Length: 486
Ligand code: ADP
Ligand code: ASP
Ligand code: MG
Image (cartoon, rainbow, N blue to C red; front, side, top):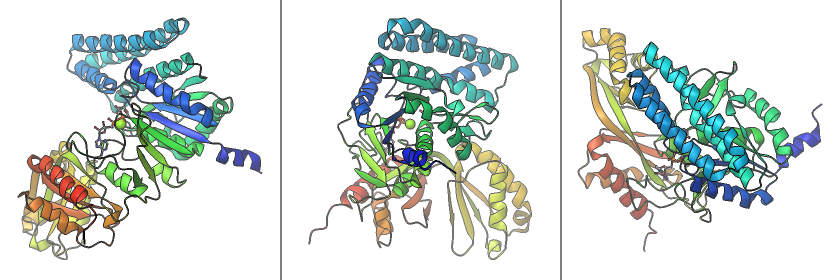
């Protein structure tokens, strides 16, 4: 029988999981700020776990090394490796006690030695597998977890770097691996609980995992957020704090809308929708592991920790009845399949999406006219040609017979999504959206609304995207949420 005390102990321990993104651990000054947050919180929690990203820009540089090797640009990847070495060594010299410096620098050299060996072999072979890419792109987190853990030790905290390849068990879908929750939780209990019980703060590498055979995988770009919530789920964390470089989740991307505002509270559904539809602040899968156990997630600024940030939970009182945000996904193509002969013909939709699945493309949005005369769907631009070829193969018969008039493709489009649980059963939201765009003569190519009524998505040409986002933010989020005056 399970030990009831052990069980209750697991569930009631006040546990804080802190995730620090690339900018938050991207320089000695930033690491000191991040460490200060942990130091401040240490006495208030029984258990603290940190998850860290690579230093900002490092994952891109690692990928650039592989690309340079593919292009036989030996000097270029050597130069990148020298820069990575210098940046990590500088952080070590600035942050770590002298007696630990030599050992840590040796660890960095070992990791960069692996990188160089991989690049040399990519250059010789003229190819790189997704599996090889994951080993290369995991190195930034591996180097940084060691440095940040040493930085915590320097300020008197007990800490140990932990490689998530020994914790997060995934399938072998390299570069976008799917975690296996049961196995992962087993590893987490075996490897993290003993450290936590001794009062040690584990510093876990974000972004990475490994297959059951121990081959390194990654969870997709920006995946450290997802790593943190997976660990939070396994550990029954009390809260997750996602520490980043802005004050919280904002009403729009601040790079596009400079007067975007921090949203104090969001529901899990709203945040999932925002992240899915392009709000880069969180990885799209971040919310999924923390929903069942109702673990609240705070998005906050490492460089302004007294700001409360955004609280994401099952409830949001602050913005009830309001729309919360607008976001966008770029670099997409929209396909439209039209034809009077499609009316009532079974299986056209199945074959259309079968063709898309055949080439492994993911569909981001679908809309069908109610008269069944057209289906349109949006895919990433990079798969446009493959999808077109697969459709021609699968629907060739219908096209020849004239049941389908043809396949139209509009390249370089953007999906813009207006989000807010306040739109549920609230008439007039779509009208506000279309009025806002119509008044600036912005053409809408397609529309879809989630059946959960948390969002309305529209497709516009990329040339119109910036203006459309700014206009929707002003008219629908800011002006539309002002209290009505009677
Ligand atoms: P981290 O390295 O901490 O994971 P990211 O760069 O992945 O940080 O995400 C934070 C960035 O996301 C912000 O600096 C901001 O530019 C961008 N961003 C895009 N949309 C939003 C939004 N709606 N709210 C907040 N930040 C956003
Ligand atoms: N370092 C990884 C990336 O740049 C993961 C992350 O930052 O979350 O994609
Ligand atoms: Mg991120």
